[in-house]
Image (cartoon, rainbow, N blue to C red; front, side, top):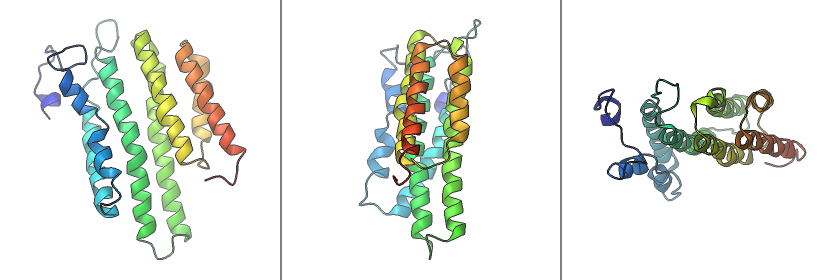
Length: 211
């Protein structure tokens, strides 16, 4: 709330480049904020699922903080914005997993068609949410070279993690997006990350019994 509404438009937001405010951004984007509780299996599944929902809602508000661009259409806070994105990508891997685990645990028959449909629908939504991150590649000219590297690192870390977690999911839309963005991008860092992601997806297709 403070970061979204407590600063004037021309006021400098907390950033990694400012030693006096760096700790604020580090704390804001620290994955341990959610990992310490969502990964604690001694806590109840429903409790962790409800907490992950609360984290997800907070993250959606976090996304509005660092969207400013300058007169050259460059992101003013590119590193901070991408770190917020990465926080959300990592969080969503746990948020959707916990949600599906709660659905299965609460069902009389986890193999019932209705339950399977709901679980798969949630995974499809997760993939769609991840695809929104890739839309940033359409604006890669708004990033510096360091920003493009960090954007590519997000693909290497979280998208590969997504495919590893759900190897048999439907990645058709993601694959189509990879093909289009690889042709459009002029960044070798991003192109290489997209190529690697495609390779990972294809490798899972060759192992139909995995997962």
